[in-house]
Image 1 (cartoon, helix red, strand yellow):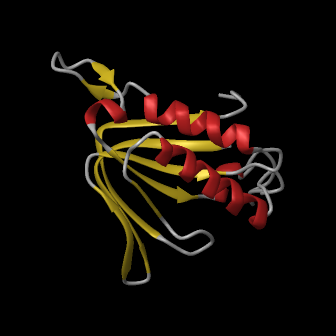
Image 2 (cartoon, rainbow, N blue to C red):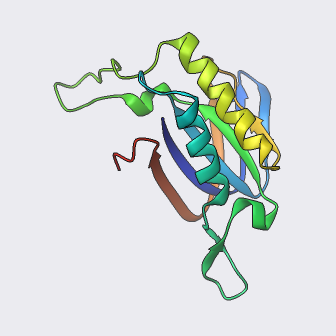
Length: 149
């Protein structure tokens, strides 16, 4: 499972002209599910992300987590995180999970993140979405549950 985590001042996701998820200060998580992923991957990433110390403390050092600052999370599914561009010019998505499996693990990740207490908003799985954000910092991190990077 892969995630692009962005520290945001605000973020929102729209489907058509309807806002389906919106947060203030917190984390925007673009989440991709791989063919070999399991619930353990979802649990690992949810725990890792809510505890990442990427918010500033009183001294200006990134030393506080989403939970420490009472932040919110917006989770948006993004299978393109498994796009392999090493050959040719058209990405291959053969390592992305099939949609039914990806949906189940996307929902598992959301449930696990909510268990830690933050307010978690979402996009709409398998819909074309517009994502707006104000990246605070900017701070953007890449995570992989298999620790490939």
